[in-house]
Image 1 (cartoon, helix red, strand yellow):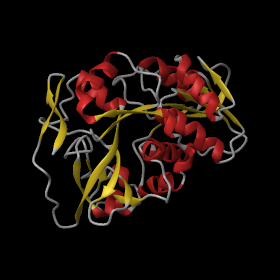
Image 2: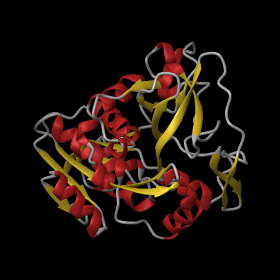
Image 3: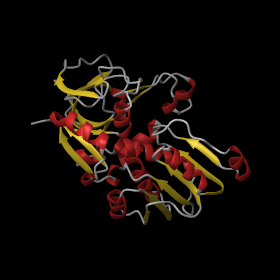
Amino acid sequence: MKALVYLGNQQLVVREEPTPTPADGEAIILMRAAAICGSELGGVKHNDPSRKVPLIMGHEFVGVRADTGQLVAVNPLVTCGTCDRCLAGQQNLCRNRALIGVHRSGGFAEEVAVPISNIHELPAGTSVLAAVLIEPLANAWHLWHLSDATASSRIGIIGGGAIGLMTALVALHSGAQYVTLADVSEARRGTAFDAGVPTVVDDLDGEYDVIVDAVGAHETRAASIRQLRPGGRALWEGLHDGDTPIDGRDLARREISVLGSFAYVDDAFAKAVQTVGLADERWVNAVPLDDGERIFHQLMESPDAYVRTALVPSL
């Protein structure tokens, strides 16, 4: 089969790889679209040591289940189901978790072997390209649950990429009346406004009850705290930078809460599948798998105007 393989040192190549053989409890997925996540671009650019090479990446993908012909989405979090966190319903914090596309072969290939328990059948008529946004949509549902926001909460979102945009739409879908999304990109601001986000700006101004940082840079984390009202909550989802200086005295004096958010629990992924209609296929740029190396390097240097770029099977 054909696959885009990461070889380390910013090297990727499209080449023939052995067709996967499913283990017990697994099924083969024939890839139909696999989105390129910013974490993958950053991982390749900065030689992330957690990605053991050679590696077929791709954790945001949809395809056809080979044995049934059903169009499905795949939850890429593989969990043990038996540790204390899994039993508490916090599958995203599983002590033995693995991620498809990081710790095992992922969706940047014509075929993928995945656990059957991670497969979700998609509603009839679902657009393949819209469905590749289910994974960031699942992140958004998890963020919304952690936020404890109400309809009257003032919600600020920093970053108009896939997760930031999905978070804004989930908040609005859930009844939030005051949602502001900030992004430095004019194209992303335009997409958010066209999607129905009522207030779109280049930088947050004023105070908010809840701020989601969907970027994870030093500057955006600082802004997520600075623009909170006393007693407000900042949710950090973005993973752009590591160390972030924090004024602990400010947190204490204003009783600010800072909460990390990683991926999603099973219920959030299922909710994303149910609400896939919030996504729009026009936000996704489809690129043939054969062009994977070229588009990957292009996106590492300069993000395009699309919410996501997805690899699709080459003709």
